[in-house]
Length: 400
Ligand SMILES: NC(=O)c1ccc[n+]([C@@H]2O[C@H](COP(=O)([O-])OP(=O)(O)OC[C@H]3O[C@@H](n4cnc5c(N)ncnc54)[C@H](OP(=O)(O)O)[C@@H]3O)[C@@H](O)[C@H]2O)c1
Image (cartoon, rainbow, N blue to C red; front, top):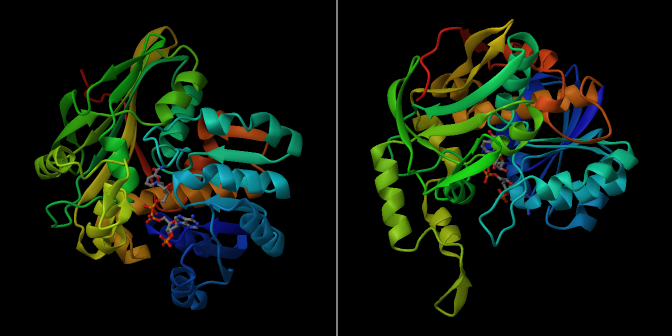
């Protein structure tokens, strides 16, 4: 029925490709393209006898709009699914505009030379996408992604007004390394070493990195320290959830991770300022990425579970109400199914579901949108079907 062009064959791309191939009824064809074509070919060889989805592969430099346009014109997809890095969002959106092809990603644009992510760059494409009659869906991973769908679902079914949202991202997995990141180390370290920020009463409150710590008891994981971070869905939810008074995002980190990170920061290894080394210019953070374990290699070693969700407070029928929507995902189960750990799994599944929403017409309208701007119900149903079933708690412990 539909054809998707998937760009990026890393941790998330690999899970997504498994899921697109499981959903052959909708995705009869996929083209998998990345900087390193051999990775795409290896995945194709592994999957082609397990699915009726026809798989082709290609090499592409997604920083180059002309190359992308040529690839899209050759493969003629119904949608381009961007699972490369946030640096490539704008070039891929440009190519989609030129070829009038729908677009979806899982992370918002961030320039390579400034550790700053925000939606303004991509929201600036709203009119152009509208005029071209094509849909762009921003942030269809877990967070951002499912957290936005959860928010839209809570507003539709459980609240007249949502006053606060606390997004809690807990990874209780253990990969046995003293220090490793669960997705692209460069993107991950830029995110967690930035200042914290949250939305309260119409303004952003900024904190030092990791300055706000809370302790929470996560179902099926246990008691964990979690820290307030800035995360991109805070920006879109502050705009799209009417009357919201406060939104915060917390992520769990173990002591070993934080001690290593502090040390790496202190010695300058997390810097993105270029330095001269042996006559060559290098960026310390990119060098660090090269020496850290590849996130894709963590799959077979990681045990434990993730527990990610949103706690909402607000008003329903004149009464105060609290509601917690969350998913628990088992690293070992994810590895058994798609040979990746749960962090890639929880991102790759919603990427496939978001693309399905677009190509089946359920989430198709010209313009650039965040996931919470669509009807959450078909997405919520698909989460249960495609491996990320959700749970509800009507009396959760709140975060102070
Ligand atoms: N929303 C969420 O919940 C969530 C969670 C985790 C991650 N993410 C996002 O998911 C995306 C993928 O993350 P990941 O962990 O899968 O990263 P990854 O393992 O580093 O994979 C990135 C892939 O993109 C390819 N790539 C990079 N630059 C390219 C270029 N210029 N042209 C073509 N291909 C290029 C890489 O190719 P090579 O193999 O040749 O290097 C690699 O295959 C990132 O944007 C990340 O921020 C979102």
